[in-house]
Image (tube, rainbow, N blue to C red; front, top):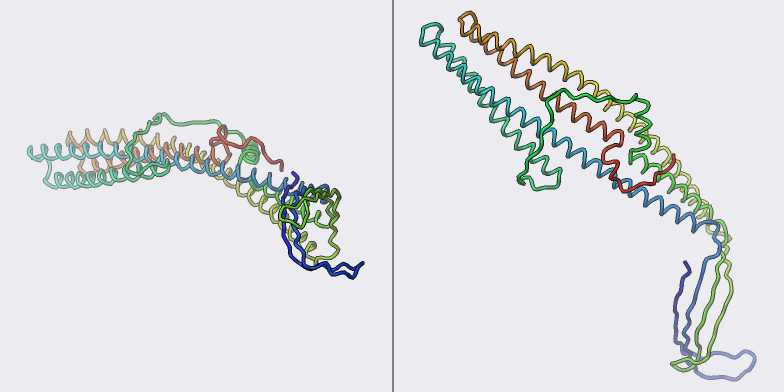
Length: 374
C-alpha cells in the first residue's frame, strides 16, 4: 500500500540572496505539505517479506494445532489412568471380601479342630494386607482424578464422572508401517511447522538478495508555503525517487550469508523433526503390538489363576489343601486380574499415543487447512 503523510514546519532566519547583494532581513517561513509515496520496485524485497510473514503465520497456526493435540493426548492418558485406578480399586474391594471370607473359613475350621490357629493368623495377615491395598487403591483414584481434571483445565477438586470402556479384548487393524510413516509426514503439525520455517528462511534469502537492487518510488506532494502563520501560496510536486546504495560496509553481503545459513539450519531442523516423528511412529506401532499380545496373555493368565483359586478354595474347605496354598492361589488370581486390567488400559493408552504420533488426534478440528509442501 502507498504511504500518505503530512508534514509542516515553521522557521525564522535571515536568508542570503546570492544574485543580489540586498539584505532581505529576518524572515518567517511556514509550510504545510501532504505527501504520497508508493514503492514501485525494490528487487522483490517487499514480496519476500510478505511471503515470509505468511509462512510465519502458517507456522504459528500449526504450533497451535500441535498444542491442541498434546492437550488431547494428555486428557486421553489421564482418562485411561483414572479408569485403571477405578478398576484396580474394584479388584482391591473384592480382594478384601475374599480375604475376610478366608478368615471366616479358617475360624470355622479351627473351631471344629481341623486346623491350627496359625491358619487364622495367616488369613488375618492377608486380610490386613488387603485392607492396606484398598487404601492405596482409593488414594490412587483420587490422584488420577486430580491429574485428569488438571489436564482438562478444571480445578482438581471439581466433581465429575467418566464413562467406562468395554471389557472385551481391544483389537484394531493397523496399516503397514510405511503407510503410517507417510501419513505422519503429511499430518504431523510439527513437520508442517518445520516446512513453514524453511519457507520463512527462503523468503529471508530473497529479501537479502533484493537489498542489492536499487529502489524506485513514486512521490507526490501538495501543500502551502508562505511567510504568515497560515501560508497561502500553493505548491505541489510529482516525481520519482531512485535510491541505489553503492557501498554499505559489506552489510548486505553479511546479511545474505546469514540468511543462507539460517535456511540451511531450517532444512537440517526439518530433517531432524522428520526422523524424530518416524521414530515416534515406529515406537508407538510396536507398543500397540506389544500391548495387544499382553492383553491376550493376561486373559489366559486370569482364566488359569481363577481356576486355580477355585480349586485351592475347595481343597481347603475339604481339608486336602493348606492355607498357604489358598493364599498363594488367591494372590496369583488378584495379580492376574490386575495385570489384565493394566494390559487392557495400556492398549488404549498406546492407541492414543499412536494416534498422536501419526497426527490423527483432533485432525478434523485443526484450524489450519493449508499445508506446506515439502
